Length: 294
Length: 273
Image (cartoon, rainbow over all chains, first blue to last red; front, side, top):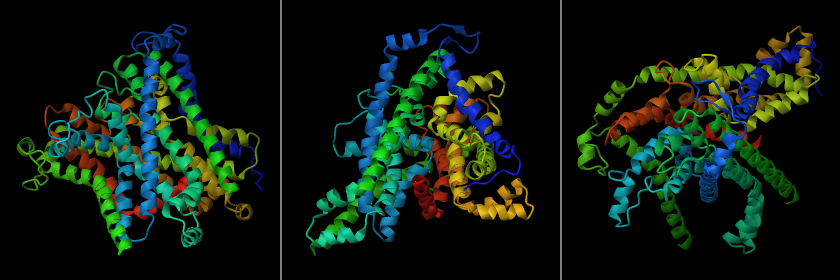
């Protein structure tokens, strides 16, 4: 059921600006990144072709694997914590009343505020001397931790701040998913003597699985692309311990002036993102099928 | 009795949760009213001795806040309007018109959903550099003039509109542009409003793209200015950084407070598509 255009060229003219912008700023750059990854270029002198040297150097120095590993560790911490916390909050907050609406709003508000604001705010809260967190830790007589200065903790700290920022999003999506869970079934199960855990395990969770797959994969892709909080809070440090993908690319271009190296990391990064998106589609399809079956 | 006890415990736990999220904002505002002397003497004391605006004055003196705010608003507004203006005809063609290559064009738009700015910024930076367009408003706006997601959402909304409506308008002698912008645009207004809201908030807050594409005060945006407050600072100048942070996040938080229900509905509507 669609219409014949009044003039043959109309649909093409209507799509031309959209496809031109997408072509120039999304598709062409992919090709350009691949092309530039085979050159050595400092933005000042003309580029020199170097074959696979950029990839070889990134591999030999271990930078590529280390960056990928750090990004994965950070992302897994973010996904697991924000998804489970978002689910728990959604279950607790799925009630009428102004109090619950207030808590929902408070948790979600961090998702609306910019990454820069969140990063600066937590940089101050986590300040080793004057920060509120350090003061609370000291008052409770717990051992003090250098949250952002210790290479062992820095990724976990950044993950924690990310979780603070995006858990509200996970919670809202789960709250929407909970609307599909029929209240009557839950009440009938309760009358039949099913406890809260059993009701969750047998009724709520199977219906929420597609939602969980969506939240999990979306936040995985999102955290793979994190940059702002690294740039503002740690600049990849200490000793590169928080240099994850996008920051590593940025550093190669704007600090080291190595466009070739940056492009090589970009190519690898994009291949991984496509892999994650394939995983996402697979999880959705599976989730959708599960939903039809129940 | 037992159920009542559980309910009280639950509410207390949730109050702590709310505090974990609201507390940092309050701390940010409290810090922004303090003086350097207060911060050094008792950094953990929550209440500033007076409602002093010194830190805000220092922010205004340190960076051209008005210039940056104007740049940010112009950039975010232009992007939002362009996205709508281009998505309407594109969405109409993809949803309603029969032509060779429709499937390919649609797949092309969908493929761009997978390509984030974090992948394109290096090549786009070199591209704009060779054209001498780095440090211009165009470098901030044009790459985002089309939103693949927005085009997709407008197409989805148009699919729900019956063909007969368009046929009737054609019989009345309406041209295609009149149909798209006069007849269909008002019918998909909720989609357009949500699109503008998301785009505006995203680009208002965006730090990544302006950081990569600009070095010049004339076109730089507010998030960069506020981040710069800290980079310029030596030692404890947190009251100034937090004052900048309040200026940056208060408009967004206020908007969220006013339109919370509508925003939450829009977020979930976006997901279900």
